[in-house]
Image 1 (cartoon, rainbow, N blue to C red):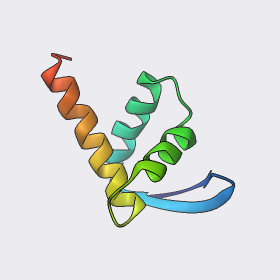
Image 2: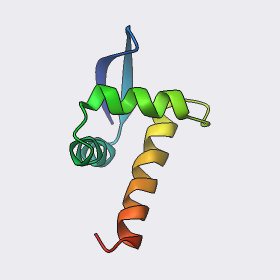
Image 3: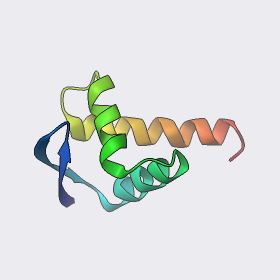
Image 4: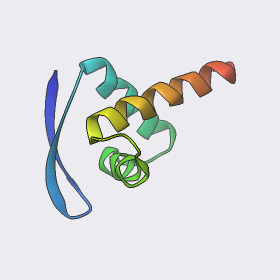
Length: 72
């Protein structure tokens, strides 16, 4: 697990994810031309998962699934 601290919507928080999920999250942010914190804020605002770490993992998984369906 890698733990990173960041500011989301004006408050500091930390997020612990496996390195593979950090890489996926960074690729996702880059593909959308967003700073990492902005992408995480979007995920946080839209999440249905009980915690942010789970919501991020689900978002990364869905992004890769969509890319696979689109041949990319």
